[in-house]
Image (cartoon, rainbow, N blue to C red; front, side, top):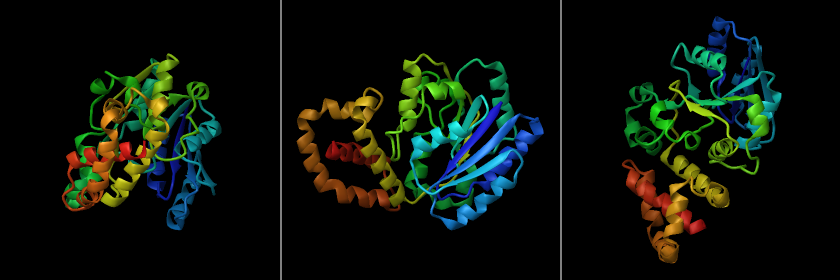
Amino acid sequence: MLSILIPTYNHTCFHLADVLHTQAEALSLDYEIIVVEDGSRDQVSKVANLKVGELSHCRYIRREENVGRARIRNFLAAEAKHQWLLFIDSDMIVRSDDFLSRYAKLIASASADCYYGGYRVGEEALRKNPFLTHNLRYIYETTYSGNSDATERNKSPFDNIHTCNLLIRKSVLEECPFDERFQHYGYEDVLLGIKLGQLGFKVAHVDNPLSFEIFETNEAFLSKSEEALRTLSAFQTDLAHHSPIITFAERCHTVAPLLRLLFSILRNPLKRNLKGKHPSLFLFKVYKVLYYLSIR
């Protein structure tokens, strides 16, 4: 019935696997859980994740080479033995007791080929760390990402797919695998959504969110955002019409040299703000556009 697939890199995810295992056992599902280390270097997390293999219906696979977000998910899909695949990012947290039972009902109905359950920024995170109000990732996520409900996401179903909480038929992913040209952070799930739409598969959005409560430093998030923009630039042809940054860059190509010059002047002051205690989302948007233009 269901293969739950969790790729991980330098992150302890035994608790996540344990919670999913408990829910699956309670439902008497025909299931498996597979956790794969994608070339993790952190010894503490690798030792902790070994315990996944001690749970019934669970497998733990350690790979020494990091192969990237697309290829590792295709590897997991190939390892899976069931007809439905549930991809979950290792830094997600299950907060609802009926998380798997909701997906089991959707599998029984089989009304779509792919379901995205969404994610929400967990309230627990701010209670544990009030200083998150100064964290760029936290501010960004609570303002823009992940929090729209299924009704809103279903208005553009193929543009709102993320691999953090994605249920998909194995046969569909075999026909439309993750593009393994994407070896670095960002946009492999966007291209998957585009291809699913082109091939006529049905994607449905549901409100079955996971909780996101782990936030990197401002500097680390900025670096990750730059990596995603480099990916966007490398695949701008594939992702055209699906990124407002690409659209903006195309519209202002005549003044792009001036904007690149402006970025060379403003880059360090912008980074100081974004790495500081009071990062501005507006300046973050400006930085991303100018950074993209500078590498295009």
